[in-house]
Image (cartoon, rainbow, N blue to C red; front, top):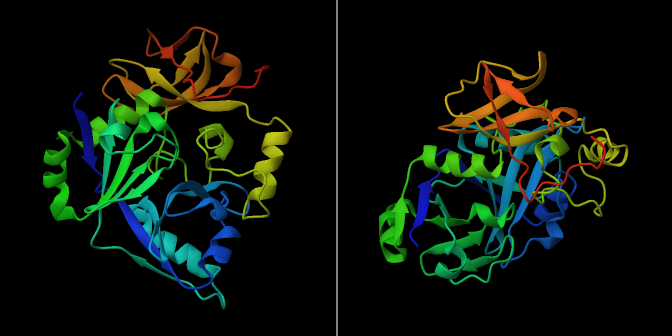
Length: 293
């Protein structure tokens, strides 16, 4: 089966160096950096003190350095934000200029890249690094490579190079939001966006920024709405999502016939419409909903 790929020019890598990098990031991000290794990548969030989303990150090791994948448009903002907390810590940050990120997906992606299939599984190769997405296996893999090697690698593995629109369509079918253009910066509550099930949060680690309010949301059952994939051909994002005449949701993003929408949990079993058209709300297999909505 042919694999599909997209060069993620809208994503960038920030290199983190210095003897204190592990301790420094452990106190800030939502996952446990002790799980990061040359064989395993991590997904994590940087939150505000109020527990709201600021950045979603994929962490990789490259020798002694750490690489943080982030929105390219917000890479410098990430560095600025991290620098606020640096104080006397021996840690430095810089945007990586000589790497590209290639997202690859398809049923045979793990075996094609000689990976066993575990979340975040990482393998160094002669051309760079292959990483199975630490959020969800169905998302596929990330290849960290030199920009000039993209065509050669696609040819070597029989990969069809696709557009960013195709990559978004793939993500939206799975119900996966990504980056600050979709996840509402300084507003989004991580558990409403599936970040727990997508492995961004370690509930057993010590304190990190935003941890108290994130834990309170979980243990008090305060999640009242969730992000869902929605099949909605012909719908525009300007129209609200209704149950009868009541607005119960709004659109986050859409690509072709599939979109992401934030919908109240007490309405997902009702007939939902938008602009007079019935919507198909999908609950993906990875998503865990509360028993009592």
